[in-house]
Image (cartoon, rainbow, N blue to C red; front, side, top):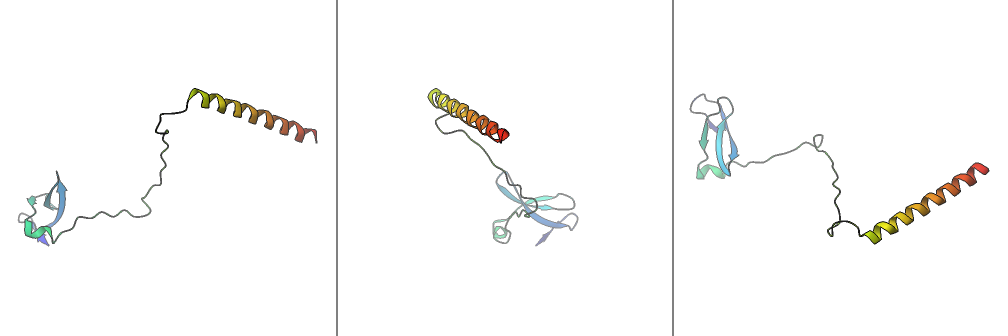
Length: 95
């Protein structure tokens, strides 16, 4: 562990522009991390399970959507579904 030569604060490793530095947490003094010190410090990040957010991502098929024939077929299926639902609804209301 190293301490700041200006204020005596603790110096922690930070990575900026793919270079590693030791930065003082009090005054912000920054010095390049020496080669022999690189093995002593390990930068790691941990996210608590409470802060994790589950997300979903929807994407189109790789070929870029559906063809006009597929669209027409889906429209026909949709119309048949609506007709069957209407029939079921009329049958249940008749009971």
